[in-house]
Image (cartoon, rainbow, N blue to C red; front, side):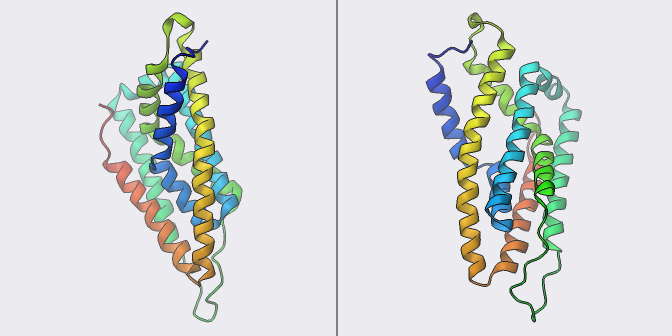
Length: 212
């Protein structure tokens, strides 16, 4: 059972963290600008499924095992970074329509592809495992019972809050994307904004520090 005396502090701290844009939010914004509201919300769902995966790992103690081995941590980190760069370069080098078809959109990805990509990006982010391992135990009360169950419950609460906050970013970004596209900037929006965000996230992930 959770310590309800600490719960308001947990909810407040989680809200502050979630409203501060991080890599997951930038990924969702890029997807929302690129392909609209539904794609943005699907990317939110995929990222939060990945976050739930890390919350389960933290509850089971497997995140600590991963973070105890710097080589394993770095392998996962670089795989995730490489995948983000790949997504960005694929977008940047997609051929735009010719001058005779200025308003034509590039071929959109299916929602299944978007969900799969977001899930891979989230799961291959060991920093999320590190975050849950560092953040959640601060609100666990050992006298209240099984620690792993408390960690899992806190992780689920955080993910539910993240769905709401990230969904807000997806809706705002998709509206901004529609505004840009209505001004005949569709090719520029789809190619460069989303592409450079993905590449930038990949580079930032690759240059991030060790688990220590």
